[in-house]
Length: 114
Image (cartoon, rainbow, N blue to C red; front, side):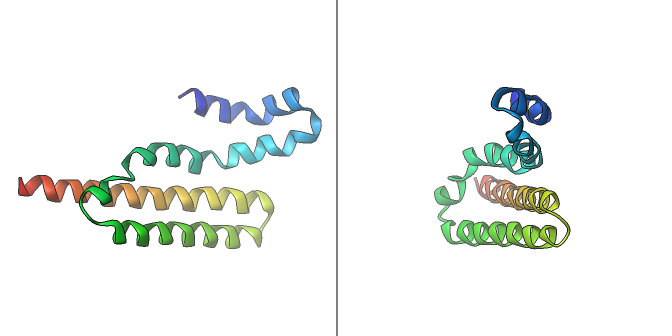
């Protein structure tokens, strides 16, 4: 929760702390917030597919996440750098959401068997 508040105020805080030449980095920090938050929320669950011997599916999902991030970057770069960073973050967070849905369905399927 404090991270989310810090990310919203990053465009104001970073230039004060590091100098005016860092003004754009605060904006990029804010634009990358969706993927940073989704990465933190997803990271404890990365071992679930290994537990159920589904590493190949998890690897394929990771490839899909990287392809989604690349697509977002390519689409956004045609508009502007800010859009490229934002779409990279949103498409990556969407990929993490798909990974979490897969993990939920995997755990639910194996819980029903027990």
